[in-house]
Amino acid sequence: MKISRVEATWLQVPIAPEQQHVSDFGRSATFDTALVRVDTDAGITGWGEAKVSAGSFGDYHGVVAIINHEFGPRLVGEDPHAITSIWERLYNGTRAHYALARGHVFPALSRRGVSISALSGIDIALWDILGKALDVPVWQLLGGRKAEHMPAYASGGWAPADQIGAQLQGYLAQGGFRAVKMRVGVFDGSPAASAERVIAARAALGPDVDIMCDAHGSFTVSEARQFCRLVRDCGVAWFEEPVAADDKRGQAEVRRGTVIPIAAGESESTRFDFRDLIDLRAADILQPDLAICGGITEAMRISALASAANLRLAPHLWAGAPAFAAGLHVSAASPAAYLLEYSLGANPMIHDLAEEEFPVRDGMVEIPSRPGLGITIRSDFVERYRRT
Image: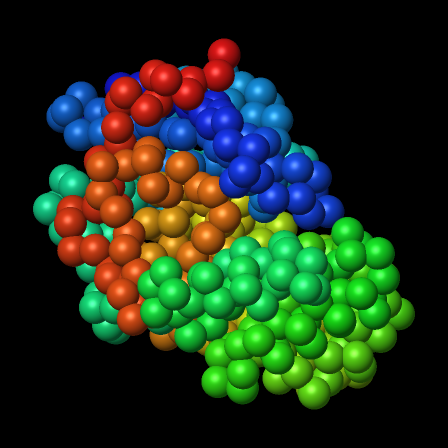
């Protein structure tokens, strides 16, 4: 089997005004992603996803160009089963032969950012091909799943203090969730205003529902510490991205000053970024986004680091169907993974891009047993929302 074509497509779906939310990222008027398609001469097609933002919208011209004009042509004629070799060659560039022969990396300058996102989308698609070729789900290729279902939390929570309780209660009713995540941070105006919303949420939900808080890296260290002090009695299950991803030492300082677990990683690329989080003792929960960090291959390496450090894994799954499905398979196979993110914002990329659904029942998501990623991409959706 040989790779015959690699193609990335920028998909952009408008979000109805009544479903748009506003956060520090701005107003979510569209949901965007790069859908990656890898065809083979055996008639098997794999699907992947590359992201340029942890949020739901962004400019995808760059990552699409890298896949279609740089990485993709390089892979035509290659064996799609050689996933590790392809990963290392794309990561190390012209010095890949040294990396493969000598056992350590010689990375290209573009070892972060959109180049790794492009690599992520291709990698996910290659695992999809391998699973389809062998007629097994990806989790089987990764060592088997530890459970048929995994718990999920409802992710959203942008409402003001007087409405946040009702918004989160609405999430709980949709799938029997027992955990929710709400957004806090700079868009609230101050740590005190963010804390007011968390206090209101706890009062509405009672003591038995886990509440996570996500600041999208928008607090300073002092603001994050103030927020932690103000919500210390709210039983926050984790505080996500308290400060910018570039300030790992600052995040470690926040972690040292609170008993609230710190979660981070959705903006990080490759195992090396996560190694730094671990070495600096800057996080309790690691959150790789498979469409950003390096795909399934790299996520499993990150999972091994988490397990070795006795940290937990909760992948960032605010994505489309390919990256979401990839996250399910990695989580099912990883001994460190324990919880899945489930977007409760408007997300047509999960619900409409693929024929299959990912229903939540009693707060649990089924790990699919279909071959590969277990998704069938709807060509009519792709053609309708293709952006050129």
